[in-house]
Image (cartoon, rainbow, N blue to C red):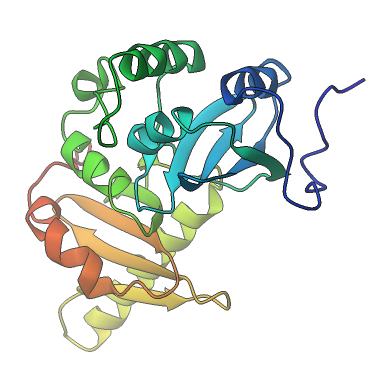
Length: 244
């Protein structure tokens, strides 16, 4: 019998207290839960995102995401907790939960301070994919980017943050069709494609240097807001195509 509330049925009211946040996160991990853990306290509000028992992301109402948000929330005193249904969330946290809790305890034992900056949480990550590690790091740190898709010129997925594999196929199809229209009209290929969803969110597709970048954007976030800070990365050949 599950010890935890069913994530498909959110807890009503103000949530529950009495169990430490660290202990509850460990229970969620042990039971392999996919859910959102919503926190409310005098120090703020925030969310932990778990998928199959792994902590993949966190965010606070102050705008912090990833490890920075996780460390901040682990220092909150007696937060009220609510379990909600899971969502497909970009992975910004790659530390094991055990290591995260140990690092947090060490940090908070050293005394209060501003929200902690996130340490490097992907040992060997830069060695695995040097051509686009800087770009993916920038995408993960940008609030409002819900998911990213990096695709080479052949349509092969280099990396994506979503569990949905069909979106990358849609992105490739959009670029192929746009290029065909350009050839018919003797025009250059598209600089960007934007698909607007009924939810108010959007899918921004940008042909980059050596590949295609797809960005699932939160409602209210414009393409120009996103592309401005990332332009130097998108024009650098870090997304390398395979051999011809």
